[in-house]
Amino acid sequence: MERKPNPPRSPRGKRAELARWIEGRCPVEIGESDWAELRNDLSPISTGYLRKLLRETGLPLSPLIEGVRQDTLDTLEESLVKMLDEYERGDRERQTAVRRLVIEAKDHAKWAMKSPEKRAEKEEMVLWMLTWLENPPLFRQWIRLRRNA
Image (cartoon, rainbow, N blue to C red):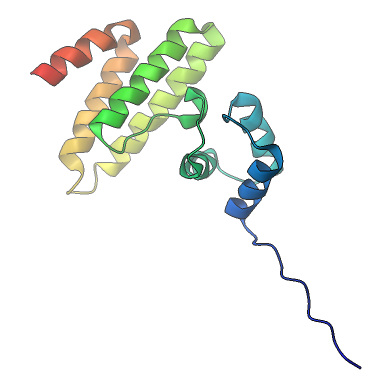
């Protein structure tokens, strides 16, 4: 009796699940409702890992989904300005969510300061995020002055 080969399995893992989700929905941008659906569909998954996977797709992400990027000082500035826009447009609940993202990013940068080769840059990033947290409306003017100094 001749055995038929098994059909190829589709890739497994969160990255593959996300790819299938995107293929099935073809989103133009990943927004907050998509985020909630993905958190449910890919459960269990950490917010940090999901955010990383979404960034890797290259799809546009709404600011609260993209989070605070810390690849370079330029990307940090861009992210913090986007967070500021969200903060200024938002109600108290949204402002709290935005602040939480900035605090989480600041804590991550503090953790990354333990690496000697990243210490100086991460110290500067922490300063930027602390300044944002202390007085968000002042950030745009402060960052201009800081960059010119």
